[in-house]
Length: 195
Length: 180
Image (cartoon, rainbow over all chains, first blue to last red; front, side, top):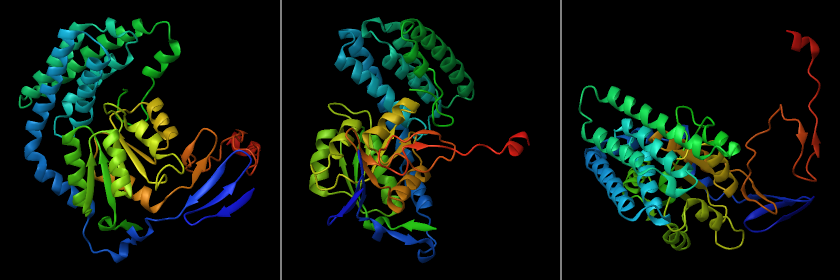
């Protein structure tokens, strides 16, 4: 092992790797909790987010309309790299944002659509009716979010779409057992589903 | 117990989704940060990274043109920019193991699965700032040490040559304890 030190990092060199300890340039941003006043930065951030929440309904609507526009482009032009990417990104954004915006029941359907789009090996074989059903379900759940039975309806829709999608993916990937195993592996994050 | 003085930190938020950028900016300002810069794609992010020299980069994975993974790989090029060691926190709706391992192998410092919360984001930033990990450079990897700790149950080859040991042998379990 050889060691050297330059102005910004210390480096220990081994046979096939180096261990570099960069200068701790952010050290001056770390303070002892006892030195802080009682302000809770997390509470402050949550309060700031709550103030913004009056806009979330409109944002969620805009995201659903973006998804619809991407679906219509696919219906018109078919799946290619560009149309597939736009539809996937729209669904993926809804999957990531819906709970933050106060629409957690949209997450499961968006996730099922992401799986369909991501794990179908041949884009031309992605069934348009199944895409349409996902998009229609997302828009309907978003539109009817105030309904008292919304949670039950959303769960039933999500489960059915997920079942059909999973069966389709199993068939389309039947000659790729390793890939299939990855698709159906449990997520690392508790409570999250795949893709 | 430590706290972060966010007023001393400069952030770059990279996300193609304007709503998510607004959420992140709101949370960061709520933590006390004043300087938050934004980019909506990887190309703009590289330019902003060079121009603003952020202390921490928050990056989405899925973006058009070149994505957050590619951006991470571009930043993690020793010698190619002013700060290849910058903490990179990847935020993504991807939650599968394979994805998270891929992000780790690209050199991200922390990974946060969406939906994000103020608490989860704060914890990732706190960890990146207060507990920086050494960087490892091999023929195929440059980034934060992927070993966050020593696994006492690991037995097998030491993949880093010329380290403490080339093969790690775990002591034989105490038979009495096994029986208990």
